[in-house]
Picture (cartoon, rainbow, N blue to C red):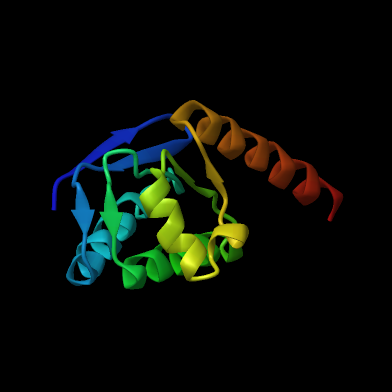
Length: 125
C-alpha cells in the first residue's frame, strides 16, 4: 500500500495514495496509524482524496479507529472523500458519525479547534 505521511507541528497527515483499498489492507492501515501515534504528535488527518473505491470492512475499521482516537483524547479527521467512498460509509450507516471535511485545510482547522476545546475543557476540571 502506498502511503504518504506529512508530519506537522500538531498532527500527521496520512494520505493513502491508492485508487482502491481492499479489506486485506486493514492491517497495513493499522500499522501506519500506530506508527504515527507513537510519538508526541498524536492527532491524525486521514486524506482519502486519491481513493476511488473502498471495501466496507475498511470503512468500518476507519470509523472504529476514529472513535478510538476521540476516546483517547486525540483528533482524527478524514478529508477528501470522493463520492463513491462516501457512499460506502453511508451504506454502512457510518457517514453521520464520522468527522470528515471536503478539504485537507478544513481538516487542519478542525484539529486545531478540537485542541483549543480540549485545553478549555481541561482547564475547568
